[in-house]
Image (cartoon, rainbow, N blue to C red; front, side):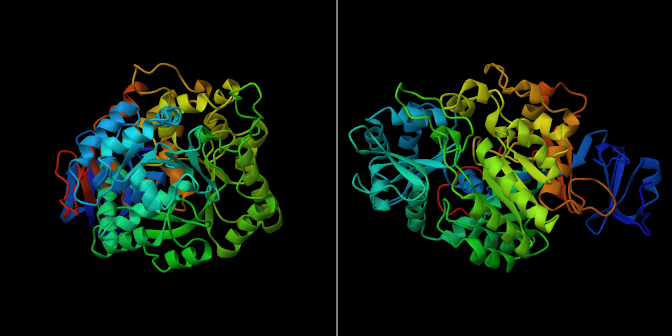
Length: 575
C-alpha cells in the first residue's frame, strides 16, 4: 500500500480499476482511497478494502481505465464558455458561403440591437475574404444590417460587418491602431478584417452592447466549467485573465459550484480585451486568491501569428511577388524591456506565460531568462507558448533554463491552420514545427493546452493527445503528417496533459498524479489508452470525472440547467 497509511476509514473507495497513477514509484494500481477530498492511499483491491468503513462510499470501476484528472495548461475559459453558451457556432473548416449562410440563419433569431457574434472562422477563409472585394457587402446582406463579430481560429483576428465598423467608430480614413491593422481593399476601402490589436476595438464595441455583462460572464464560466469537466479536465491555466471572469469564478466557488482549479495569467500590456493591465491587474487578481483560483502568472505577448505574418521569425516569410522585401515579423518588446519584465516577475514572485510563436521570439524569451537567472538564480516558472518553431541551437536551452514548452496540439495537426501557415512560411520551416520529441528528450517540461476556443469548438484533449502521438489529423480524409519525426510516445504525451502540465502551472503539489496527499482528481474512460490503436484515441469518452473526491461529470447525465440570458447554444459538448 502507498504510504502514508490512513488512520481511519476513508470517505470514498474506488476499486476494481486499471488505474494509471503517473507515480513513478507505482505507475499502476487497482484502487484509490479518498479522505477529505485528498487521496489517502493507492494500491491493490485487497489491501485497500480494509480502509472501508460503514460510511465509506465504495465505487466499483469494473475494470475500467482511470488516470489523473487532466490539466489544460493554456485555455481561455471566458471566451470558450461564451462561445459554447451564447454564440453562433461555425466549424473552422466551413467555407465562406457556409459562414455567410450561418450568419443569415443566426441573425433571424436575434432580438433588436443584438450582434451576431461567433466563430470559428478558419484562417483559409480569412485569406479568401482578403482576396474578395465584395465579401463585406455579402456579410452585411447576410446579417440584415446587424453588427457582426466573427473570431478566427487564432483568436488574434476578426471579421466584422459595416455596422460593427460604425459601432467601433472607424471608417476608411481611420489610422491603424497601435499593434493592429484595419485591413483594406486595393482601393483603400475597409473590408472588415481586423488584425491583432484592431480586434480589441470590435470586442469593446460588442461588450458595450451587452445589457448585463456580469450575468453573461457568470453564465459563460458556468458553461466553461461543465464543458471542461465533461472532457476530464480538472485544472487549467487561463491564458489571459481579466477581473470580471475571476469575480465570476469566485462566485461559483463561494456557491460550491466551481469543480475546477484555475491558475490565472494577467496581461501586462493591453491586448484584445478592454481591461486594466500590468501591476494594477496583478494586484486586483491577487485580491481574489482562493483555494481554487490562483493568480500566479502574468501574460506577455511577444508577437502575433504566422497567418498574418506577425510571428517573429529568424527565417523570412515567403515572398509572394518578385519585388517583395523579405519579412521576418515583428517583436513587440525590446530586449531590454523583456529583461526588465523577467526581473519584475522575480520581484513579484509570479510566473509568466510568454506568447512567442516564432523562433526569433522564443530566442528572445530564452535570452532574457538566461540573463536574469544568471544573476538571480532559480525563480518563477516561465512558459514559451506555443513553441511552434525553435531553432536547433535553442532546444537544449529550455531544460537548462527551466523554461516550459507550452504546446497546443489541437491547433497544428494537418488541417486548416497548417494549410494557411504553409502559404506564408518556407516549406523547410513548416517541416520543423513543434519539435516536441527533441524537447522532451532534452529534459524540457512540455505542457499541453487546448487554447480553447482557438482552432476547435471544444477543448477536447483526446484529439490533442492523439495528434501528439501520430502527428496526423484524426480524420483519415485529411492526408499527411506534420513533422512526424517529432511524435511523442504515449506516456510522454499523457505526461504533457497530467504531471507535466501540473508542474508547469504550479500545481504539482495537488494535481497531475494519483499519490497520497494529492487532490482526488481522477477520470474514468471508456477505453484503456495503452491497449487501443493510437488512431482511436480521439474517440475516447470520459465516463466519470471526479474532482476533490466528488463526482462532477458522468456520461449520459444531463448538465445542470442555467437560466438563459438570451439565445443559448449548448450546455455541454457531446463526447
